[in-house]
Amino acid sequence: MATVNSTTGSTSTINDLMSTMNTKSTSTGTDGVQADTDKFMTLLVTQLKNQDPLNPLDNAQVTSQLAQLQTVTGVNKLNDTLESLKASYQSSESMQATNLIGHGVLVEGSNVTLSSSKGILGVELGTDADNVQVVISDSKGNAVQTMDLGKQKAGVLPLAWDGVPDATKVDSSGKPLTVADGSYTFSVVATRGGEKLTDAKGLSFDSVASVTTSGSDGVKLNLPSKGAVTMADIKQVL
Image 1 (tube, rainbow, N blue to C red):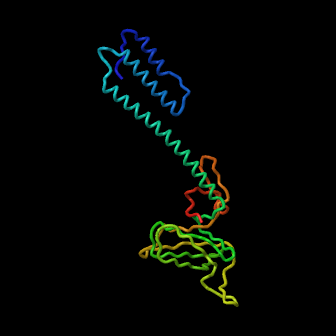
Image 2: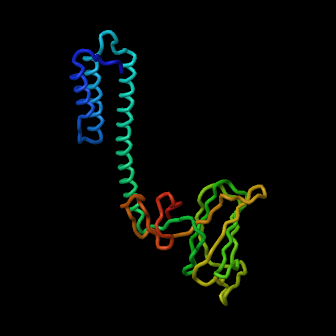
Image 3: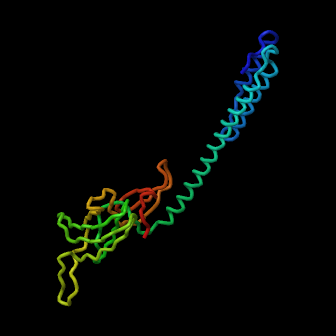
């Protein structure tokens, strides 16, 4: 800002400026923004009243300072708006998360549980694939079944496994025999143009047991097998 008149009343002028600059305020948020604006305007008016007539305050400088003040005020108000939107989003996310309690979900993983000759798993492809295979192995690492899915588009593909191995055997009634119930692992092999894709992932089935909405980590879904995950970790709700 321009030079303040230092000839007459310099002591009172300095006191006015110091009083303006040192004004205490306990306001926060929007009130704090208004308080800063009032402080700036009071300081500007004090300078205008006590400016040197031979070296008056430049109009362009005043305009520039007012524009800067308007920008800062706008940014502060935008921050307040964003904080309000963030709180609203977190509240909405919490409501969505609690609605998932008891639902089955697919999350990244390589385990599949066979129960009563039924198992659920999934595949996530980042890009289109010419051929996709899911190889299921037992606890010893021996492949028991290969699921040939053929050509698939990018996205999430849920799968059901009936427990029937590649080396199919039948009982006395002709019904196919399945492998024993229990935990198995699987891997996804996806290719395009003869090249193996690195963006193909396996998805394991789990269920949402509870939801944690407190803490700095945001909303967490608690899964019996996977543990705590975020909403973004849920690839599909079944």
